[in-house]
Structure formats: C-alpha cells, structure tokens
Image 1 (cartoon, rainbow, N blue to C red):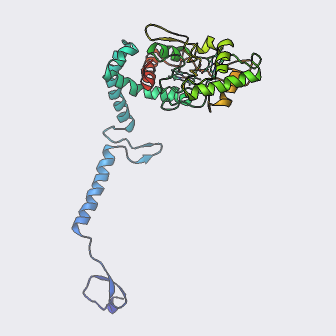
Image 2 (cartoon, rainbow, N blue to C red; image 1 turned 30 degrees about the vertical axis):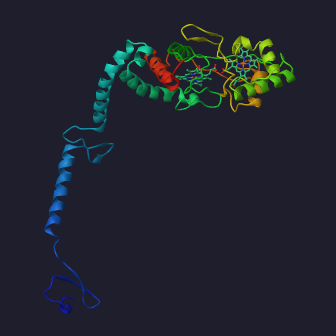
Image 3 (cartoon, rainbow, N blue to C red; image 1 turned 45 degrees about the vertical axis):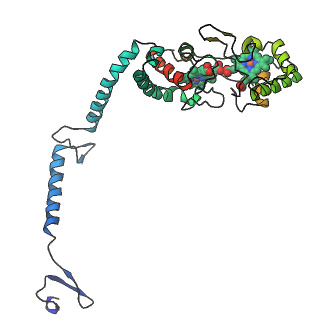
Length: 298
Ligand code: HEC
Ligand code: HEC
C-alpha cells in the first residue's frame, strides 16, 4: 500500500478514502499523556492506601487501615457524645421543666420524633393527625386530658375507653333520636341539640360518662385538670369514630365501645408502653413532651 500512498512523506497510516481523506498517526498531545500517567499513578497510590481491589469476599485493605464501618462508628460516637449531655439533663427533669426550657424542648422533640414514628404513628398518623378509629393527637380535644401528667399516664398505662351497648337498653326510636341529637350537637357546637335528645341523654345514663354538659368532662378541678372516663366530647365537630355523622353515632350508641360480648362494638385500645421491653421512662418522658407540643394546652 505504501507505494500507492498519494501523500508520501506524511505520517499517515496509508488508509486513504475519497482520494484525500486519510488517517494520520500523530502521537497524542503531551498534556493528554501527562493526564493519563497522572491518573495511573493515582490509582496505584490510592489502592496502596485504601481498600480497593476485590479479592475473594473482602477488598484489599490498604495501608491506612481506613474503612467505612470505622468512619461510621466514629460518627456515631461523636453524635452520642453530644447527646449524652442532653440525655443526662433530661433524666433529672420533669416533662414540665423540659417544656420550660426551649433548648431542651427542641432537643427532646427531635429525639421523640423518631420514637413517635417507631411506636405511635402506625395508629395515630405520622404527625399525630389521627387515623380512622384512632384519635387525633395534634389538636386540643382530649379524651383523657392533655396535661403532661395525663399524657404520661396514657402512654405508660394505656387507655381503653368503654361505652355500654344500648341495643337492649334503648328502643330503636330512642337510639334514632339520640343519634340525630349527637349530629345536631356536633353541627352547632353543642347549642342546637333537640329537647327530646337532651332529655334522653340526661335520663338514660349517658351523663355518667359524657358529663352533664355532654363535653366528656365529669369534673373540672381547680388546677384546670379534668376528670374523665375517656368519653368523647359531643359538643364539637370532631368525630372520634369515622366517618362521623348519623350512622356513626347510631352505631356507637347501639353497640358501644370495647364491649367484649358485642362483636359490632367499637374497638378502642391504646396499648400500655411502660410494660417491660416497650419504652423506658426517659423515652416516655420525651413522648409526653412531644405529644403535649402537638396538641398543647390541657
Ligand atoms: C395500636 C394502636 C395504638 C398505638 C400503637 C398507640 N396508640 Fe395512642 N391511642 C390509641 C387508641 C385507640 C386511643 C384511644 C383510646 C380510647 O379511646 O380509650 C389512643 C389514645 C391516645 C392518647 C389519648 C388521647 C386523648 O385524647 O386523651 C394519647 C396521648 C396517645 N394515645 C398517645 C400515644 C403515643 C405517644 C403512642 C406511642 C408511644 C401511642 N399512642 C401508640 C391507639 C394507639
Ligand atoms: C360507660 C360510659 C359511657 C356511657 C354510659 C355512654 N358513653 Fe358514649 N362514649 C363513651 C366513651 C368512653 C366514648 C369514647 C370511646 C373512645 O374514644 O374510646 C364514647 C363515645 C360516644 C360516641 C362517639 C362520638 C364520636 O365522636 O364518634 C357517641 C355518639 C356517644 N358516645 C353517645 C352516647 C350516648 C348517646 C350515650 C347514652 C345513651 C352514651 N354515649 C353513653 C362512654 C360512655
């Protein structure tokens, strides 16, 4: 081919197309070669220092002895050291004392958020917004009271509200009247309940649990604490059992809540978390602060 090369003396490879299109054999530019050697050198250096080549199950170790697991462990140690300071402080304090300290409250909320996600959100929703059948925690409507003492009691010991099934106590017409009355009450903030409904409410034993004012409160103590048996507030638009409204109310009144012998009964069990192996005292304290901050007030 070389003798037919129409461009003798040029460093082409002898491959010529279309009369004058040819492949040259120039060395790559110097900067490019330097780059190539530098990166090869880097690979050698790196693989001497750090884990690099897969050999069997483990990569080569590298002379620095660095590993991702060690790096991770060191990171965790540093975080733990920072936490320990706060954890020690919190251990000696009550939930109310923590709430009075904005810095500690901040730390506690961040820490409790994880606990809440792991232990509570399956039932109460990730932000305490509730789920059908599980109460909202992110509001000011409490079945058992929203003081830190009451919340702590709820989390530690659990709760299980009970309401009698009225299927054999009341006539269907009475249940109807009461269910309609409950809807009227919820729509008017407790002002618009029919007289007929009120009269049944007061004479058929409902007040024993829901209170004289039907707001779920039996007694309000001087210090603002409320005494309740967990009966729902019937004066507000918040429905404990979804979807709410006439049918829901009728169902609850007919079959009650947590009645073991009534299969259609509403189920409402808040587990106890102070039992062995569930949550520590410190964890419960953090959750009390967290839930209190969700709902606030009492
Ligand atoms: C298995 C579902 C379930 C889990 C898990 C659960 N709860 Fe509950 N919780 C309930 C139910 C049901 C009630 C209502 C009990 C009742 O009506 O008597 C409730 C009630 C409460 C109340 C009382 C609300 C009020 O209005 O007084 C608080 C506070 C509460 N839960 C906090 C928590 C926290 C904090 C956790 C996590 C540590 C948690 N719950 C985990 C089901 C659950
Ligand atoms: C033994 C106590 C008790 C008695 C008596 C009782 N209730 Fe209840 N009631 C409760 C409790 C507790 C709840 C809330 C259950 C829960 O959240 O765990 C409730 C819930 C309800 C609800 C559901 C409210 C909602 O938001 O979904 C209605 C409606 C209701 N009661 C109406 C009545 C009426 C009407 C009577 C009288 C015929 C009555 N209750 C008698 C304890 C009682």
